[in-house]
Amino acid sequence: MGRHVMEALGLCRVVVEDGKVVEISQPRLHRCPMFAKMRGMESLSVDSVRANIEFRIRDFGLFTEDRQVRGNDIVTFGVSEILSNAIRNGDLDAACIVSDGCGSAIVTDPEILQGLCGRISGIIETSPIRTVLDAVGEDNVIEPVTVPIDQVAIAQKAALRPYRKFSVTVCHAEEAAQIRDAYGDRVAVVGVHSSGLCQKDVELLFDNCDLITACASGRIREKAFELRDKGLVEIAGNKVQIVAITDFGKKIVGDKLRSLGKDFWDGNPPPEDPVPFID
Image 1 (cartoon, rainbow, N blue to C red):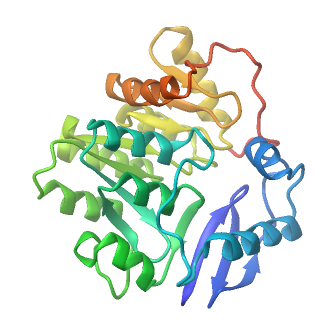
Image 2 (image 1 turned 90 degrees about the vertical axis):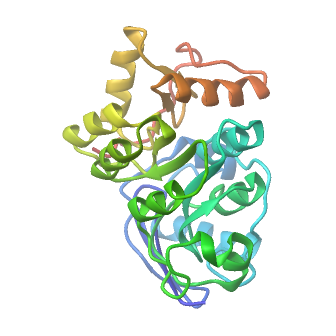
């Protein structure tokens, strides 16, 4: 089952080896409104994070050969749900994602995209998981023995295929710029795992992404509210906001909202922010 490293629940570094949690750093976030709503976690600590990761290992085989690879909407509305819906609707042909067990990968099946990405956070390091590689296909990863995480490299691989439009999730601002420069409007660039970004990187993401999830970033929220007041972006959600920046971003975020009978956030109900912001 190997070694896996994930940043989760307030940039808390979690290390799992052979299905066992062996290291957890102190969370930088005291309260996440999404986990408070979904799991009743009103405060974050090393013990509560450990319990949550161990629950994920038991529940859907996170980081193990028991990994469930197909799924339906988990949080109803998030990045994986938006991208899965866009593939289902024909707005995207493929998504370049990161998951435990396969690293960077190209996915064209919306159920696999949701199953792999709907219940994970920022994967930093992973090891091969045969269940995941069989579902994704070895020809859809960078290298099946070492399963590296490299979103620029997987975007290059996707660009060689006859996809009309594909998405790439990025957590590094310079990668967003590099991918946008290389593929233009053929790619939908999606900013994820954005807590802790400096102002320069926030600006670079807004310049190059179609949509960004705010995570626990106060800087992203401040920039999003400023641009929304000017009529330039749309915001979805009042807890962990998703910012739709381009016309394409607004379309696929809006489509997912409408499928749920909802619309973009107009400021009500008031925001329920992470505590504290991580900037």
